[in-house]
Every structure is written in structure tokens, then in C-alpha cells.
Length: 98
Image 1 (cartoon, rainbow, N blue to C red):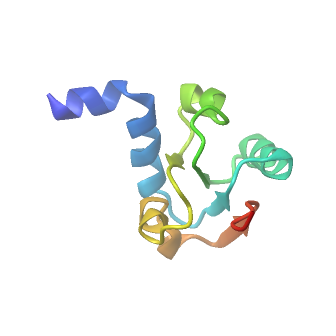
Image 2 (cartoon, rainbow, N blue to C red; image 1 turned 120 degrees about the vertical axis):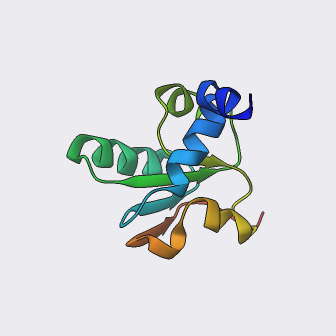
Image 3 (cartoon, helix red, strand yellow; image 1 turned 90 degrees about the vertical axis):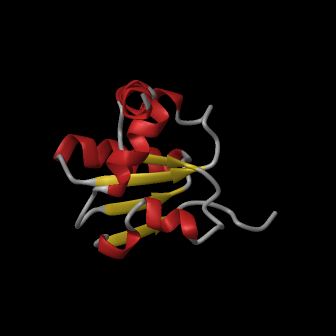
């Protein structure tokens, strides 16, 4: 039953896709600059993963089932979900301090 739920829950499916990426770009934060980077990656078929804490901000990406992690990027455990260890680059587009 758990696997069936995962297959039809786009948030969990996106997280699973993110955890299997290799030699990819990890983009932290979703703002105007990261939106352009994602558009480039999709257009050029470059592998990527996005970490964003606001599910509402990336609702369209979730529905298309892109590899992303919906969670707080200030916690290093979330980097494992995006498979940062095997990434070729990490792009930070997020303010961590207010």
C-alpha cells in the first residue's frame, strides 16, 4: 500500500526522483533566478534537483513531477534527499538570514 501511495503522490514521487539523481545540478531556493536556471535545464535536458521549502511556490513543478525536495534547506539532512554527494554543482538562490 505504501508503494502505491508513493506512486500517486507527486510530492513523494518528486522526492524519490531527486534521491536518484547523479551528476546533476542542485538548486536551493526557488526565485526568479532559479526559475530561469530550471528552464535552461529542462530545455537542454540537463539533470537537476530543486530544494524549496514552500510547496505553494513550486506547485506547477510538482504537478509536472520534476525532481525536487519540499523541505527546509537549512537542515543538512535534506541535502542527502537531493543526493548532493553526487551532484556536479550546487547553486544557492535562497536567503538564509532575514
